[in-house]
Image (cartoon, rainbow, N blue to C red; front, side, top):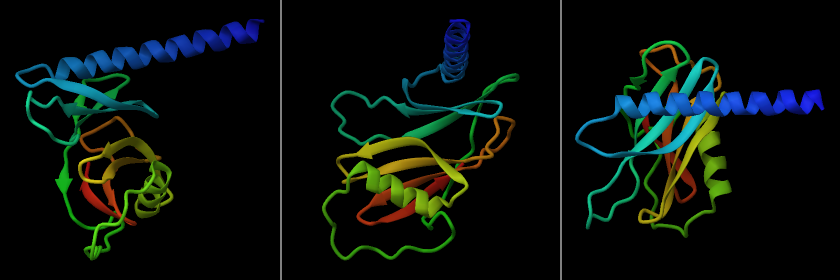
Length: 169
């Protein structure tokens, strides 16, 4: 009985830590634009939270997974820097597809992203792109830390049977 109670308290404390981190990240993004939270991942010393800009009415668009806010357990939240690339996550160029294949299921897309990012990465956020017929998969290094100014991650765009690193952060 004591073990169950201790486990419950631990889960509640983690939930409140995550809520507190999300509120700190939300406060950092307050301004003219409106954002919504897409994904949240615990790293060793804080949280990584991905946002999306809420589209204006009458504008049809897929999700854009940015900004990525890093919230250390102690210290001020910060926005990860991005650098755009069109290379594979491990540096190889991917050739264009001759014709668009049928859309893949999410499990296959995640497997492609994991193979491109390498064994030291874990999935942070899966973002389907129905208009584009694919998905963005954000991967974090298993050793990612909330101490900045950089975060070790990559967004892999998957369409067809290939994945391409869209940007790193």
